[in-house]
Length: 388
Ligand SMILES: Cc1ncc(COP(=O)(O)O)c(C=O)c1O
Image 1: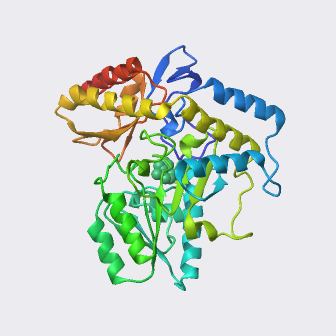
Image 2: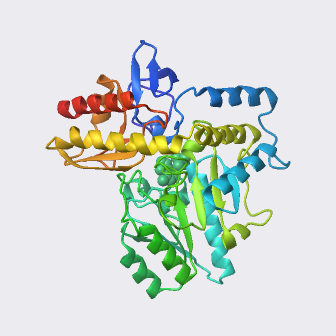
Image 3: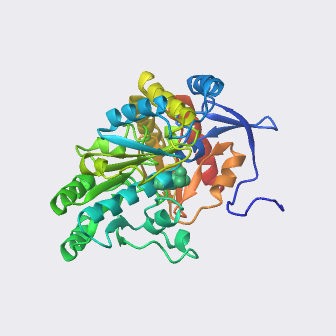
């Protein structure tokens, strides 16, 4: 269909009029079980009453003032996020790509401080960090880079989950200032590294005076059953990026830093018109308080285990299913062949999910999902895979 939109997305032919909890509804009166949550955004589900109440109240009070003035909600959000993450300070922007841009700008300053004129950041194959020029250059997929050359310089790519490859790079050059990874690769196909991967990266960063940057845009804010995925390990990163679920649908991102990384920015180094405005900050604060007050982290872990267990018992037996993996409510089902047509079949079964890395079904259901809805994901997905 001709449209006045730039043709960037291959959208499915459906549009939703409203949502409630784990469900989205269309104008035809059909209801769809949302196992995608706008790609890891609506963790609290649709129209969560506490989020709606904050949106309504804050919209009646104040939307925006600019960072030329103190923003109380932003200060409170920064306090809350730093307490939850163990980081020292925060900078707010509006998206994941901007959070990672902020992290990469910190790396450049860190390089200057160390008298490295062309600082390099180690990044991974299949990593995904965003679509801006720097973040697509950091991402490990030629598909998203092709056509946008010249790429931003200063990245060295190694295979994901390969500590030895990083060691080799660090031993052979002295211009590396940071390692940047996702604790679980999301768009790369829900790839979970070895249990000690982050611990090993932390040791290498300490030994070589590098910053450890964790991109938790997709894994953070409860998705894996902890506030942040690195909290399944004993380490802390130097820089942590967050977005997606932080606003439950209101755009907001954060770049958090600790120790020396937290001291790098000085007035004038960075900025954002909208970042951390009174409205977005109020909503994000409510999202965090709701996850905490409703004790959702153990629920996410429990529902994630149940979903993975039931998937293994059912779709796991299908000959085309190669592997099922995940942590908390971030799950991938790898098929033995490309399966980009599956989400359209999902529409027929009234189940929403997507496919990433060509052959991995990605499930990112809301944190508030119940056991009955988990079972419905499983039975609907079984039908989808049988129809494929
Ligand atoms: C790990 C990761 N980093 C960064 C991004 C980019 O976020 P945004 O689309 O908000 O710019 C994404 C988005 O999918 C992501 O999954």
